Length: 125
View 1 (cartoon, rainbow, N blue to C red):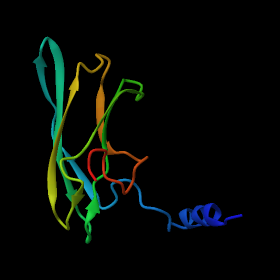
View 2 (spheres, rainbow, N blue to C red):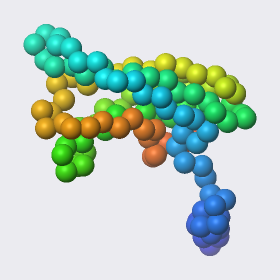
View 3 (cartoon, rainbow, N blue to C red):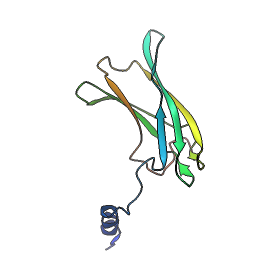
């Protein structure tokens, strides 16, 4: 029987576990742009990912979450950043379109996919 899961749980409890998705990276999100395309409302979310750490970092898959007035997630859009890795102090831009998001939307949040910390987004080696 292996002790690895037990040891990983102990390390996590004392702050020595795996890093969170996007550790060492900073998101700078701009104000959304609103347009219409083919009769549908389009919200464009863009900004930058900046490596604020002292080492190269993998840029994981990104997620835009759309919330309603009760702070419930009512729409999600996952997308790959333009580069799978950032060198020290390097930054990249990102942009994604939300096509016809729910009318009940009252807020958005851009995050890194917590299910894939330290792994590049799909489509990047």
